[in-house]
Length: 306
Ligand SMILES: Nc1ncnc2c1ncn2[C@@H]1O[C@H](COP(=O)(O)OP(=O)(O)OP(=O)(O)O)[C@@H](O)[C@H]1O
Ligand SMILES: [Mg+2]
Image (tube, rainbow, N blue to C red; front, side):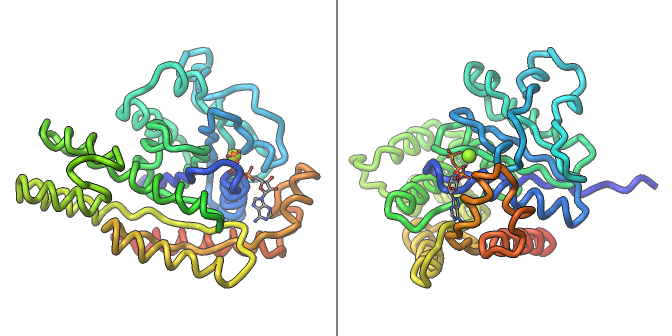
């Protein structure tokens, strides 16, 4: 009998740039590969792909765009070797994402094709921002993971990301024109209907139509982003994760899983300077240990899912 392999898509993003997304994607990928699972990392960052640097590699010559434009026939040829057993890298589909403005379903189809390769995990580095491309990849994934650093701007961006992703998700499932209009209205923070949060929005929809309201409330419940805090220096930084979790639940009506934190660690820039992966150069550093613990939490959560 042919065994059906479990395949998961994890997507890491965060509103802000330069907060450690690529470092963490690279680290998680290396750790899972070391555990004997087959992993492909995908750099979907349009602005400045740098995941390869975190793996100590030059910019890959072939990208997903070559496959989409049929310059490369076989998807396998788009996967660059990384020098690590079980770990491959696909450089972003820059042209596909930037110019073609692909629909959600096209992105989904592309991911499914990549998933059809013989792998266990597909991990996406989403880059910074809250563009539709980023939100869609976040929503398509089995685990959407947000990186935040303990700074007010990053905290603000995290809430913005969560709200934008949630509204985008609701927009996809809401078929009625009135609801879509309400969703568009809700995106404006100062809207006249006084909808400030996803919770307000669902209550407003419930007043309009109880049945649709209930469906959307269930959808809200299923939307469970994960949070990682990077570059922590104090206990207060670590506790911030619990505050964000409780604010999300109380004010936004969204359940967030706080996966863990990674210490600010000089080993990171030493490894960046050497262009060597952190987990290989400094496997026992505080930052490496944080990344490994978070990966183990993610793997454990995956096992607990129904
Ligand atoms: N835990 C940490 N300790 C110390 N420095 C860190 C840590 N995490 C990240 N950095 C520093 O932040 C820099 C940016 O990291 P990285 O490139 O992974 O961020 P990014 O979010 O992918 O950025 P971009 O949005 O530009 O893609 C790294 O070069 C590193 O020097
Ligand atoms: Mg990056």
